[in-house]
Image (cartoon, rainbow, N blue to C red; front, top):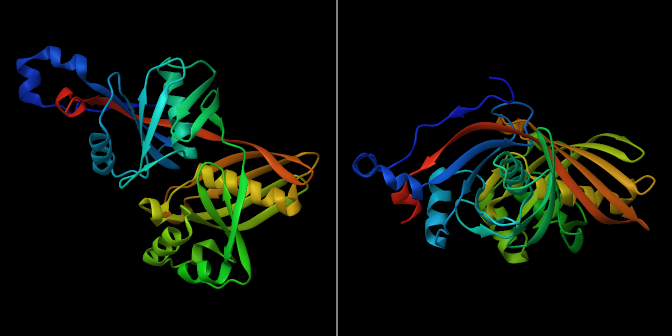
Length: 309
């Protein structure tokens, strides 16, 4: 399959009702499955984007996200600035990188937005840009919100740490923890869950810098987000943005910019790449752009009996 090939999925419908009443298709919802931050088909982080011409209730959206079992599912409503709701299998979240990037690309393909546009998520308005097979978003300005015990976090991941490590917010609060080898970690997801609930963060990015030059860094990352129902996420946009902010704050920016490439998902058999550009002023990160390649996998229709309830 080429990077642009797409398989059209069989419709998921109430077959008897559809056969008797073909007009029920008019209330159905389209579903588009894409791989985000992908290096090719079946890589990166899978995402389902459901186009809701009529609103779904909260319980039905949560049930569908649980049924699909992806790290996130997006429900979009058409408007000049399309409105998005983002659900993990267990909860709704206000904003996240890979759902925004994937949704932006899908909505552009469906002519809901132009090459540049604005999406409205629960966590705020987000500017987006589409460049061929790539999509980019501008998350909220990054914020350093806390420092937490590095040894405590490291112990939950099966390694050791010292001192403190920062929590950064670029859509969601995420812990940034430097480790010797992300692939050697043996996380205790229950411990991660307990710490995240106690301290109010969504996940931990365990990272190792593998290449560095002035203004440019490449890092290997694993991300653990049990507090929002995702034990390990294949490739994580908001956390990549937060890592870029943390590295910029540590002095890695050059001439007002830091370019970060995050390599993630290899340990899960889903290799992906996130490209982050951090704008730096007076040694502090002030702007972010997060993006990568989106590959279409399949599209289909959710039957009216499911979409309408």
